[in-house]
Image 1 (cartoon, rainbow, N blue to C red):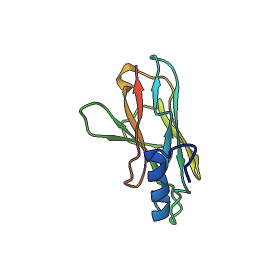
Image 2: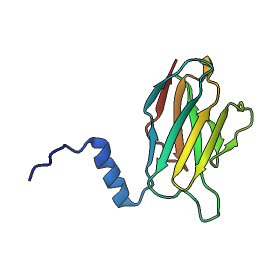
Image 3: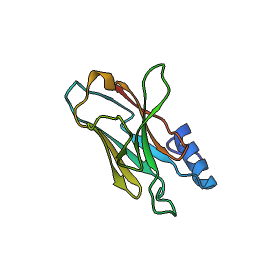
Image 4: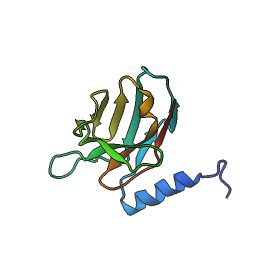
Length: 128
């Protein structure tokens, strides 16, 4: 029996990870173009709750600029790492999370990752 639509590789991977009991994070949009001063929002949906048995929700956001290592921006959903500007923020609970840059600056061009513990999904790419 043939399927009317071919299953994409990412859909197949998602199904396999679900079988293995892994939490899958899905970000959107995959890329976004903005101008300085604009607001940008990235969504992250988890395949199941990322709330830990200790009561904390370990959903983090990282930034990776070209040629550099990733750096932590936000941990436990909404807590800013030391030295990170207040224009970056995070929110959400359960399975739905949001990362926002309130006023984009030229230096914010980078890949942005949602992270649950040490699992890194595909990034959202922001271009100026």
